[in-house]
Amino acid sequence: MKVALVRLGSASLALAALVALVLLAAWSATARPLDLVARSPRIPTTATLARLDELGEPLLVEWYRSAEDELDGEWRAAFRDIELYLQHISRHPAARVRVVEPEVAPDERARAAALGLSATRVRTLRSDGWSERRIWSALRLSLGARGASAIERLDPEHARELPALVDGLLEELAAPRRAKVGLSAPPGHRRLRAVLEQQADVVELDFDADASIPADLDLLYLVAPARAGAGHLAALSSHRARGGATCMALEPGSTATLLAGAVGLRLEQSLRGEDGGTRVRSLPAEQDFRGFAHQPDGPLWFEAPACVQGDALLAAEEGVELDLLAASAAGTREESGARGAGAPLLVQVRPLDPWRGRTIVAGDAAWLRDGWIDLEGGANEALARLLVAEARAPARRAARLAASLARPATQPPDAGVRWRFMLFAGALPILALLWWAARGLARGERSRDERTNRPRAAAATLGLAGAGLALVALAVRVA
Image (cartoon, rainbow, N blue to C red; front, side, top):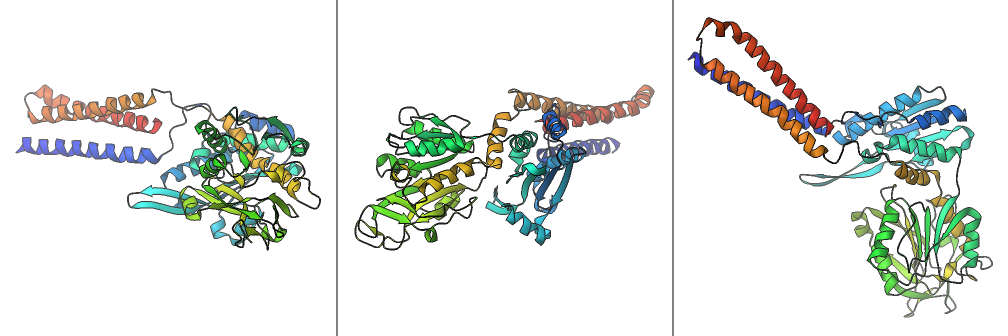
């Protein structure tokens, strides 16, 4: 009877150890890995602290966040990193930190909206399908009289790069640099080039011949491209992924169809002006640039443009929104003779992820050509300037700068093998020692020495088992 009880107790202890391992692994999967490297997302860089010392201007850091009970494990771990980072920043005499929960403070929510900040939509794949919710996580920095900049969406992926992001924002605010704009256009665009050179450093490209885009471009003007292969589409996709903006002025044809289709748009029926000619205009009443710094403030002129159409539902599934920037004026007709008033002439593809670059598409390449961009009374040139100003916004520039400063992975390529080895190294001794303890206790009392040493053996067994559990915890968390 005594042996059976001992075996039952040993089996219960083994089962409890296995349950503990499962619970420990589940907890560790949502916890932030241990900071075993010098560069931590929770600590400001030395460059940031040195820059604050040098500038001698007050820094206000405002974090607009959701409440703790609205977060899951990944977001909760990221928010903990942000909290610890802001605690470090607040210790600097020149820095002040405000943490705001807009959902419970209507005045703060209205202020955030006035600053262009809002909650972001987050989609999560669960067992019963996709779940969508809105989470506040935006960081705004104000540096004395030098201005302000913001990180519109500080998600778990980018929270790991928070020190580099803040360093980039401060560098941009302290010493703004000129925008860098790529221009790929056929002959006949000297005025456009001159306009861009007034605001930016212009890089001449021949996108038809060389499907490559410099990594540090803020904006790419792609005018009347004649080729669009797989390499061209891949280069444009990488440019958008780096946060670069693109303006495509397309001439209807197979190339334009491929390029527009790559961003979820299509070019349809060409239009004619009010007088039946090729000039088609978009008056200020048909324009909507509310998401920009200002309006073009005048009519936009196009030459027999194609309608730029898109599917809003399909775009939402792809994680983008379609913004109609300019529509045709009253009196415009399609080539077939049907009314064409209100037809989309200029459409912006805006990713829901603010870290990705926007794409503006026009079904006409003439609006940037000499003789059209500088039409008297027109706003084509003003729009070209506006797009450069938007692309050089501090938040957009800092995001791309941070990408170049991104720290390498904290674990070596063989880390997956290493943590699995540590896991087994911890789990096997636990199981082996429990089996050994059960076997030893089941033998009964054979000698006085055994009775004397049994408590010591039991203590050693539990101690080694605890060490194994600690090793498992460390392996899972580091991985």
